[in-house]
Image: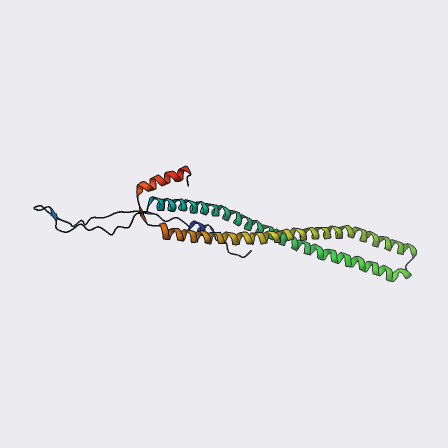
Length: 224
């Protein structure tokens, strides 16, 4: 119950980085000689980064969509894991309260059992000195007390056994939750690694806007 769960902040952090259009910029200080129509200072272009091919862009965009879908699934899974965690905490609190109550009842029953045993021992010790009717009355009282107590003992033991079985189920749930939590955290880390790899290959690379428009239509149409 003490493992750390990567929360929605961690999942939400796994976001796509943008792609960049390729652009060139002319030197604003370039001048043209009106006599020979020559530029006194040549136009200087920024070094051009090679545009992504349409296939490269398609691969990056489809992979980006896949990663975003996976991210969305993880957010749903996170809600399930957190809901089970909260349910287990509530169940544990109820169990602790019930156990405390049973401990109190157990002490009360033990006190009554000892009292009945002591009464029986008292009868046995003084039987020889009692009149027949007095002894019979004491024995009947003992039997009545014992008979009244036994159903309570049986009910307590039955409830105790049921709670033991119920708690076994709780422990199984705790183990299953711990595994689900570990699996979720591992999935978050794996997705983060995938996103980091995607950034290295796809983020901030120039591409043709026409290619992007065409590919996004493919994505919307559900093509692969």
